[in-house]
Image (cartoon, rainbow, N blue to C red; front, side):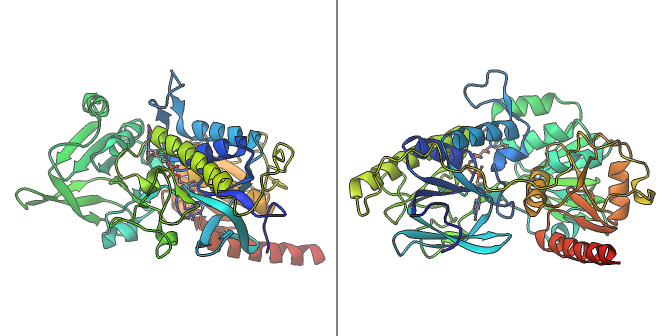
Length: 450
Ligand SMILES: Cc1cc2nc3c(=O)[nH]c(=O)nc-3n(C[C@H](O)[C@H](O)[C@H](O)COP(=O)(O)OP(=O)(O)OC[C@H]3O[C@@H](n4cnc5c(N)ncnc54)[C@H](O)[C@@H]3O)c2cc1C
């Protein structure tokens, strides 16, 4: 078996690194259980979970001034690592719950690795839903986005729309109103689902407008978003709203495909729990949004993470099908998974030459980012793990960079965008990135042997 961080099966394998996953990890590790967290790689939700996509979190107790989403997640992670949790920065691609110990298979840069665990906590959360329009798929990254904090900067002084009527939609609208000249919230009904406080804030903002009782039937534009065709949900009348960006915030679906056929799911794909946090298989527990269609809050996810860890502990000590209760401390066990080999610290990097593309000193791997882009963080970790040196250019801080990214990429307005010796890669697409890096490596090996 490859990949196993312990010589024996782990006590708890936790799949997911949102508030539920990290809280479960803190509880499990403090109970002296050998604990492994699979953080995810960014393909099915982000390492750190949904809060990586937001700025201010005002309702998580203990932060009287509010806390920035990614900061809160970093703190939870550090707290868990303090107690000896082992992290695997990879997606789980398969699970085998019909055998014991349970087997979890993760896709790492070295291929597939198997991990054995005496119990499992599923905390895979949820991913954004899309409208499902052909025009949406065609214009993703070209003005259509699900992450205002990532891509909002590209729309400075422009008109954008936000589809949705919940707290997340209004949060996106308020964030976008910092950059855009006008933000129209498009919602199918005349009543919003969002909390009163969020509605009051959004309604008070002069840049936010409302298109209620309207649904998007088509996103207009050939190579970039130019507008949306709306249909009135009451009269059926159609109209066109010109805009340059459309942010979709219509909700989430639970990340449970992986468990279909092994764990009991409800009609919408949420995990069904029996007896507290236990799923249909004893020893496999569920925590957070993956099993919660009702509350879907960071604090409730954290709470069920704690519950799942306590349930796992009871399961392990009560059932005693294998005796691992040797009380061995986890404090001395290895905690980190990789060390970046050659990451150039952007803070220490020299000022960016302008224009970047024509500089003879153009670095080989350049990653264009924004400060709140979770995929950028995932990509940085990925390059770090591969030992690839790169230069980071934050487009918010580098005049002209946003415009150049858009030009080189043929109209894409999204980050991360990579320039690998002139090959432009939009989005954190590992396969494309791997291919470009491979040919870049091959070319530099030829250079060196010349
Ligand atoms: C924009 C936005 C703003 C929000 N603001 C607030 C707020 O202000 N206050 C609040 O209380 N809540 C807020 N929420 C809701 C809150 O973020 C969620 O309720 C909470 O994050 C759920 O936590 P979770 O741990 O269950 O799942 P998530 O946060 O969704 O985390 C799931 C984790 O599972 C991982 N994962 C998924 N599949 C796999 C796999 N196959 N292998 C390995 N890992 C995997 C992902 O990488 C991720 O780490 C907000 C949500 C959004 C989208």
